[in-house]
Image 1 (cartoon, rainbow, N blue to C red):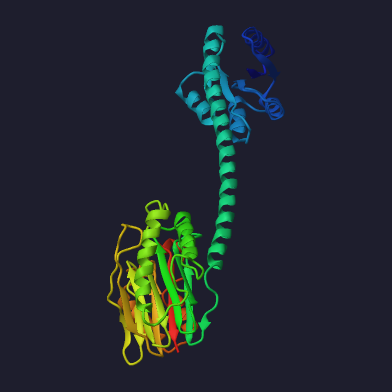
Image 2 (image 1 turned 90 degrees about the vertical axis):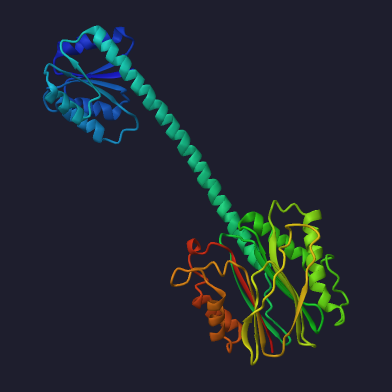
Length: 398
């Protein structure tokens, strides 16, 4: 070890240097605590053996100075004293000493104390090595987390980017709100015209949230796109259009079981077709929250319908629900994350409160109605209060 011996008595310095050198240690001498502290700041000493009483700076003061300093390594301190009694030992411990030796020095006793010091220093070195290793790991993890967060932000932008932007198609006006619980989520929706009279739409909520759910939702976007081969909407007519939503739900359920490894994910969905010529709405409900319908002179109602989620079990039959949808009607689809939002009373949002909120915006244009609901329902509240993805889609027929 590199040892600094601090003593104002020259003979004691020489004795200690002789003993320690014969034990194989490297020794530097100092006459007082002030000189010792200057040396400690310039060199790496593992052990300091210091006399108690010295001029300029005594042993306990040197201990306190070393302990108060932000040294890059631990310094083990042995105080030499001719004093005895608990009071002096407590003083030394309070000052930061690790061990004590009584003058005159006994070689064998000093050898034992040095072995104890070496064990402590080895433990300290091992701890420092582990801390440096952990710091390196933490730095790597932090860099990886930064990269992941950057990728997730890009993925979130891409997920939002594939959502529909056009919000008017002839007599149909739409608007929507989308907010994942994390960067990306399992909610998705889309809509597009099939021809001049027929309009296709859906709202999907993949179980769970996060990356896996988001990837499945984006895959569903492709499966249900206007160019997908999953359904046959090339030349639909008013005679069989009502059967398409149920058929498409069954095909999608079969496709998930036969062609996609969903890793225990399933999805709830409302999928439908709006016939603007006949002013009718045809849709299928597959485990999704029951939609809300407004018709002139009838007000808002929650449509009582049930259906089995997509992707849980194969060979499920689905039923199309057909409703009159005259001019001035409004249809709202939403994921169950909306109902999980807490109200001002800290209770989950219930459909009656949602209908009350919708009634207040019935006369507003659909874009303004969505914006009003956004503030009234607290859709932008902090993620810690948003336990699930939230999406809602509102469709008007003028």
